Image (cartoon, rainbow, N blue to C red):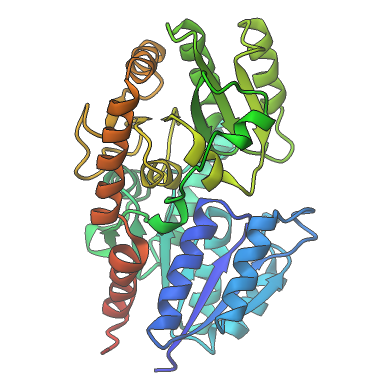
Length: 388
């Protein structure tokens, strides 16, 4: 064995899949492996967020090798496959993290004779006409069935992988994502200076939603629910940047105006101080239409916030209704509206108590360094029959 892990990450953008890639790469380094991370180039993604740059730099500081390669955005790139194949010959395994880089990882693995493990971070969506979507799904299934192991972030994802793509159960493991809770255990200090700078008064309650502005994340559903909810002293803050080439952010702005929410909803874009914003918030709400497993929900819980989240990726292990927050039906505006009103009706003491329970739950089940990442390393080692 070479004790080398080759990882592929098409979008090093500092969002969920990148964080999990970072956590797992760090765990492999701690376990004594050499890590080579191959990411998409800045040519393809014109502006790499600072969070993405910081994560790559941190991995390099820890001893990982980071390589930028072009081609992930293309429908097919033989040049990228050849370069990945050459790197794969140095490794024991390829671990792929983004949907768009999996086909390249599979092809490189097949040509180099190296097994591929896929971290399935999300439910799948394919673009194009109905025929094109079906064709893409069929071809995708043909490829992913060649993987040694698919590590799914939830039972919902597992069911999709088996039902839609024909992957056998023996090639699947389920492991939720995790976080480093201490990143979000921040004392807010006196007052709420960040929110004050954004024009929010000290007597107003702040509900936060974190995620890129994309239909997947359901901010449009959240706005409709918020408009109908009886919570006049609550402000809603949407934290996240727009998907490239997407008109969704403009549509959200238009919806805010149409619903008369202009003085109650803030869209603050991509922020590098999200942990501080959560520390100063009162509650958290997540309205996604589909997910693999939401890091944003775990981060809000670690920050000590009562939460409302949709059941699109199943239930958080150990989560109790009314103790940690509430689960709502995916896409159900009325259910989300009622949950917002329950959040708004909490006293300060109730919010603190629920937040403490939420934080304890994350520590018990979702601490990535102590609980999740070691399990991922063991899954990979077991799949490769690596002893110790």
